[in-house]
Length: 256
Length: 326
Ligand SMILES: Cc1cc2nc3c(=O)[nH]c(=O)nc-3n(C[C@H](O)[C@H](O)[C@H](O)COP(=O)(O)OP(=O)(O)OC[C@H]3O[C@@H](n4cnc5c(N)ncnc54)[C@H](O)[C@@H]3O)c2cc1C
Image (cartoon, rainbow over all chains, first blue to last red; front, side):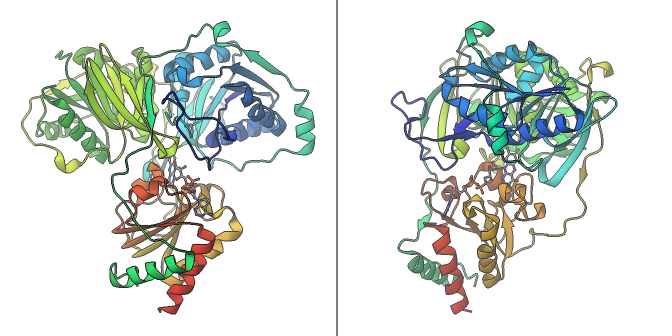
């Protein structure tokens, strides 16, 4: 069983974001990066599949040279090898173009299962996995909270809205977009980190994969949103804020 | 039934019940319309009554896309049926509500048409020979404008709450039936009946006061501090998704699109950024109090009272102050 898991590196969650000079993306200065959260769960699910059913876990990442940090970390957790599509400017691709890039790399590998996170914390399109499935001709399941191998393929638990779920069975090869919380993430061990150093990271380029940047619906402008409603801010040190809020809760909101 | 300058709205229903976001999307199409005819379609089996209901809105046409293989949702059947419908209607723009179901098939539908879906948009403007779509990036910290120019069909899905249902205009429109050609062999997924996890042990929907904790709390060991605040207030404890994902609080205390929808008198959001999937579960609260160290956190968009600062200082101070007044 060969599992490919597509992962992306995004700015760390607590980052202060500033729009750069082009007005189209954020200024990367002083930003630290981390694996996109749902992708971390997708990686964990892939590793658990290998532990249960054998085979190989291949990590696929499109991103700048600095993304090797996230790739190495995935190898340290137990992935066998990696494909790195080196591209400094991912925002030059729209969702379809980017999926074409990933699809070209995946086709050559002929996997049994492809996993992605359900959406990225930066662009938040929530589309890459589903577009990939269409391009690869695979059936797919989205927002997946459980997976299980069956005689016919794979049985997955889809998260629906409002606390509803649904089981769906798909033939393999298939693509799943993984929801955060599907499993318990592991930490990398010292041994894992050491082993990762000798694991293969194969470099690929968009040109070699036959995909050019561009797209039909480009991001034109990035900006801080105008807040529609202004909260009434309660100022001062914590003690003063607490006292004022309690006054408000008592006399204006009448909740205590 | 071609109308290449129009908007096609794909409504969502499950076993005869509308998804509320469908109406919001239709209201958005009406507002954008300004002369552009709006066609609204509903997919399923025996959906004539729903289509008739659509016909009572101010639109150009209602269409029942009817087939036995659309009775339960699959991405394969839905994509095949809509591909045929879009080819027949030839709209300039296809609008869908950004529901979990739409997330499942719309990228596939757009890809099959060789197009790009602009997902989860909060505003749409007609601009020149195309559209500008505004959507959130970085979990609501920044907005981005996306331009789709030239010949349609363009595809966009609309975020929950982007348009108001109460602006929806009534009218009278003809109702048609569209019978797509579908083949059971096209459908690769074998779907089972949707279900709810065992009856909810915790019902937050009736709570008067809710103290809800988010990732700002940093670790399981700190949950007790927020629990103490809830206790002092006599409030129910709730959480954002990551807290439940990490197992720091049980799933049934999760508020949001995949958790519970609550409408308390006061909702205290402690260390919660206010992502849209969280907001949809709590924006019905009468009063929202947000405690967050980031003054630009999206939660302040919907908070009535904002305490900008470190929750590790504010929460204990607040607990103490409330105890004094009780
Ligand atoms: C399909 C789907 C379904 C989802 N369903 C849900 C759902 O039902 N419910 C839900 O909640 N989410 C849901 N999510 C996840 C959602 O998108 C967000 O990721 C999540 O709500 C973020 O949780 P958070 O606000 O606790 O964490 P974060 O976004 O990480 O925010 C933490 C906040 O804490 C603040 N903070 C940090 N330290 C401190 C401090 N010391 N003092 C004060 N403030 C501090 C930060 O400024 C930040 O604003 C869903 C996502 C998807 C894609």
